[in-house]
Amino acid sequence: MRKRAQLSLITLLIGLAMLLSGCSLSAHGEDQKVLNIWTFTDEAKDAVKAFKKANPDIKVNLLFITNDNYVQKLISVLQAGKKVPDVFFVENTYWPQIKQIPLLQNLSKSPFNASEITDQQFQYIQDIEKDEDGNIRGLGYQGTPGAFYYRRDLTKKYLGTDDPDKVSEMISSWDKIMEIGEKVAKESNGKVHALSSYSDIDIVQAANIKQPWVVDGKLVIDQARMEEIDLTKEAREKNVEAKYESWGSAWTASMQQGTVMFYAEPTWGLPYIFESNAPKTSGKWGLANGPKAFSGGGTFMAMYSKSKHKDLAWKFMKFYTSDPTFSKDLAKTQQYFLSNKKIDSELAPELTSDFLAGQKYFDFFEKAGEEVPSAPQTKYDNDINSIWTNKLNEYLNGGFKTKAQMLKSFKTEVGHDFPEIDVND
Image (cartoon, rainbow, N blue to C red; front, side, top):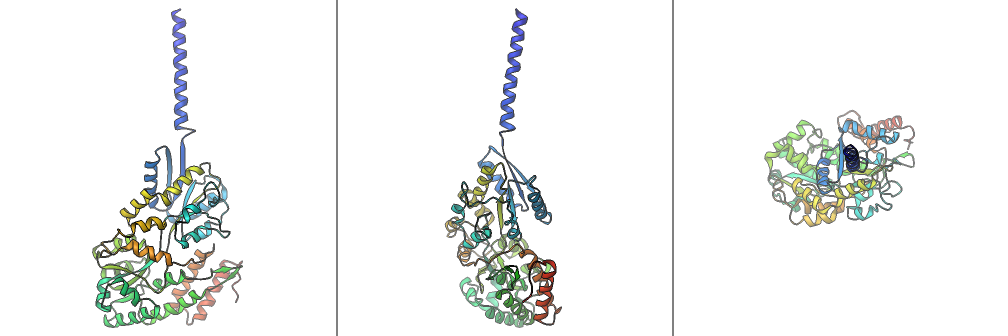
């Protein structure tokens, strides 16, 4: 009798153990909410940390891949349809190519209805997020309108003022900038230049094209690009630009040294370019509008269309782009200008920068963002932009005697690399 009771007790304990084991497996195994994210940028870490804090029941696997290898690995897994992350980040340079891949979720459709988020964004960002058919394929969380960052001490010395509105008027056309450049170079005996590089012209002109590189299979060189050739050549010949290589050591050193008056850079230039490279110059900088509105860079998030966790993926994408608490904290702690106009406008009256001598930089960029044009894009942009930059640089350095020679060489190389594109006039 006692033996039978013991067996019954053992059986009961085994059953209870199995039940508890099953509950544990269910809680931490099959039914656990898991979200896989790929990124090339450290910025995602902060968003994931905040998202996990707000959603402790969701496990997030964040894989960081260096930018050099990232795009190719992403394209490879998308083509294979295996081990594709639920959400992945794409830099603006590669976004036109990636967003045309059919395996990106169409976010315009229900249950996502992404327009509820994108309608709150700047128009140029909305246009970038859409594919050729007008479907939303990704969400941008950054606002990247540009400005002419200027050294206040230099504008005071050579232009007589460091007031942002007055400086903006003084550089409201390329002709005015050329005149200032000649004046500054002469009065400083060639030690100070108005622009750091021809890239200060390129970033503006590239953002103001009306036609993309390729239209109906034919190469197109927009008028803004043609103007760029003449403008950069004039700036080089008149000693208006310092001939620095963007992101080179001399370029970054010039910010600390005070040998350049203006740099054309986007919003993120404040923390990642100027504060990073010239920390001892705090208070010596300002923001001004140049000849044309422009933008630069940006990052987009997309969702894998065959993901088994679309609900989690969408929850994260919504959080990163429109959660007011997270977005405001990001803006205040990291000087992060957002794609969401509504949140930007709420912050605009209060956010100032000591580095910019107290200027209300969110207010400046909010207004600038409304003026940024929507430059058309194609999947060829990254490669053709690279060819264009190389040929333009070669032309400025005397590698081509005439503009016509440069253009001929440019077309020849595009035709060689992309035989499907008609490069003939």
